[in-house]
Image (cartoon, rainbow, N blue to C red; front, side):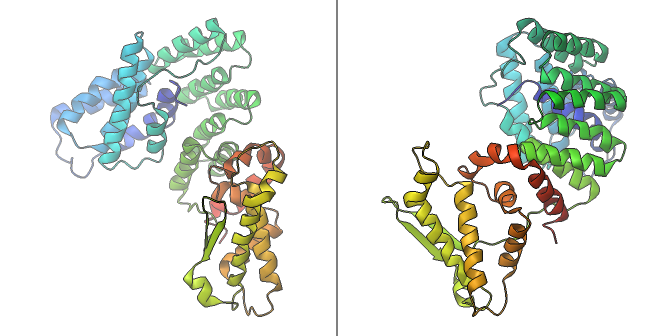
Length: 409
């Protein structure tokens, strides 16, 4: 769900770092710049240095007159429009600014902007531009947070910090008050204090990805890439289906020239259920041609096992759920059935790469982590919170051992 914090969230982590690199340096297609353009870019640099994103808005709009097809200008204009919404009192105008910002981000994407966080931003903004949830049910603390956010958007960092601190005193469980205090210190270059406040936010809610991701920013600025990686990994494992968490790790990968990839495991069978609930499972032609030579024929048990779950085993395993869904337990059972049949196939002369990798994951106790992080659908993802609660270490091990090493090659 959208929260007005997103306007400042990505601005503080991306805008001030990248805008100087992409807008104030020569670009292909925009090499010829006028004196007025140079003056505007100098103004923009000053606003960014001051963390004054509201002030940057009209400058960006003027620069777009000179460079109407510059995707980076649209990307940052969207942030500035959201920042303007932070200081706008009228709900109607705030909605209009959010709608404008969403359309601006869409335009940036249309023109070719490839920032890893762009899709997450677009999806986070509601089509109608409506307000997000309150920071807290404590009205006084919530008002302080909104005032502090407005101060931050205008570069008044000390005022913003004072507001966050007061709000946290009124509501000691106010996650974003601690989080945003860390952001202020990050912007001021006081990374030691930033870390203290990010850790306060993590202590308040260790299953929210944002503080892990934010706390990686100072580490990236100090080129402490291994430590930053660990924070991005933690963000991913607590909220693996968040595009913001995924974008954070992707940014780290870009900076460190790391290839992110899950193990290459091909499930060569299609499973579908008809209106009567009967299964139709078909093996790929390549699998059928391979026969027993590499054990691939064992995939026939995948569909058979899933059929049993669909017909009766799901209802027995999840008696409190009235409607069948594809579950983690079902997928694990089906893959274990494949491995069991493959290991007993005496005609197999070798083992296919997919089966070999699948067995490796199973032997290491990481099969569930692989399924949840690489193969989850709408049904399987419902089992993630329960698995995370007791198996956080396995999820972390899987991501570090496989995902951030290009699939464990």
